[in-house]
Image (cartoon, rainbow, N blue to C red; front, side, top):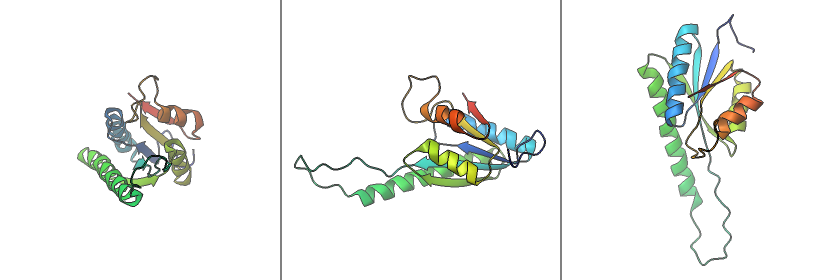
Length: 153
């Protein structure tokens, strides 16, 4: 834990996707950032990967560039919402938009490069995969992170 100051956290990162649990994660991150005078990083991971076009059915070829730009615009809006949420709680947050096919890998790589002391994530995100107690992203982070991970319900 590189930047940890005593029992506090110099740098806290929160994964945000607008889900109810990720909103709670931002709220909890704000509380800790105030208590420990930490830098708060809010990240949102998005993907512009699309299924391969097989060309079997007589369908028009989709314009992926337009879809990719819409996806990125939506991701920027989501990140802005997370930063606004923190600022409404009196915390100045930094934001980072990450494009990746693997949300877990993107968060872990960013956390390592930024020397994050704590990752906060909601129990379940917007994936719709409700069968597990922990969502696939939170589970992946808990199992593979080199720094502590706090999962908020």
